[in-house]
Image (cartoon, rainbow, N blue to C red; front, side, top):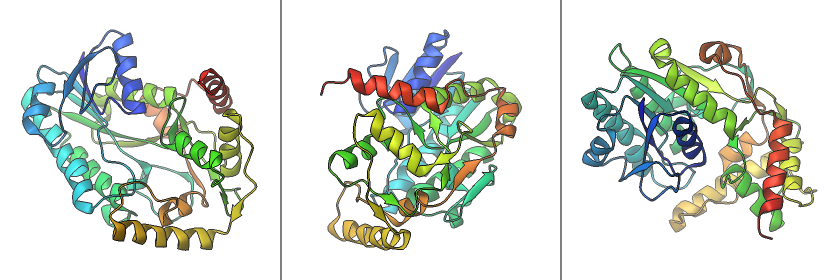
Length: 324
């Protein structure tokens, strides 16, 4: 196939583009700056209809990853990129005759605030989400799946907490805080959390692309299917980097209140960096979040090839190879 991947500079976007290219697909990545992936590149903003159409020309399939992430920014910023940008991609896909499209979503589009124990992929609910990112992604997912038909098969994949060597989001932030002495366990650290190693997430997206003609209109959550206590996960990330585990603990109520105050302060000061804590992050770090993967694995004919233990071993080797 000729495949367009939007958001090629992200950890997951780059991994998907490499997978497609290695197996022989003619792969194009679309983003605002060079990716260094060694595949054909088109540059532009996801909300620029002419740039998207140019990148989409001749494509058979699309993996749409480009999005505004994080907790900082106005609702207008998130809506423009995540909702209107997705609408632009869908329109261009129709005009280009694309037959299959994978929309990369998030489990947060269907859940907010409560513990998730063996949960499935519920319907995206913009009104029930927490924060601009989750709300905008929920709106975008509903828009994308609403466009699915026999001409354009759209499937939404919700990877849960993707991580791996080179990750600047989950891994990078944990390590930065550990090095500066600001890493703390929220609550007991016993809440079970599921995550997804980068190779497994990329394989699942490629599998979804290959099966989009049979999965059109569906949403699926993907993860390693190995829930672990959040305290254990953070400790293994920190020790993989050769750092000491944290002994700091913060009560959940204190973390949530502090996160709420930090969000307000950041908004008042119009800051663009991420605050050290948010109310949503405190909730995520203190409640269980893991998903039943049986339906996903049957639908995709996929299962994780890299276990969490192997993933942490690879992460340790990667850190050992980095300049001090």
